[in-house]
Length: 238
Image (cartoon, rainbow, N blue to C red; front, side, top):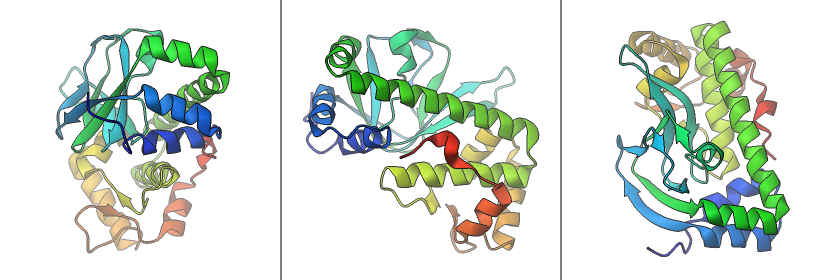
């Protein structure tokens, strides 16, 4: 497999946000990663199936965990960034009906489950960090449920964008530009494309989003946070 030199930087940054500060432990984790290759935008990274015996790590690019509904619509549960495990849940529960898709061209790595077992036995703090990561992901899913079920569209989208800004900045990426399309955000917020477009236009008219960029760029962060009434403690980012 290709060398992992330099490509595990995002994984190391991610685990630092989870409370790990031992260079020895972080390097031991990075050495377990084997670069699997690239996946093109729109392709599935993980498909509903039995685990192949390893967990996939997103090393570069952006992805989403999703499931197709009976009427053919895509429901996005979470967005995934460099350093995130795409399918760590399969280390414990090998079978899953969720999928993960590449929102951009992505570089992937894998860590074999047997190696995860060995390194967490040797470095208990790493096991604690993985547990914390699982809890944070569950918190994001709970917030998504609250968002979709109880907030009006404007606040719903503002919350979703705030969350992405915080998560991107935690791994050293400028959070002002959100690397998703309106369709991606609509599928995460359970809005139609028309309703999503109208909401984005409202945010632009309010001076929250840039009018000069086709994508999603935040130009008034304080205003966005105020609309969202955003409380990011559920992300537990250090």
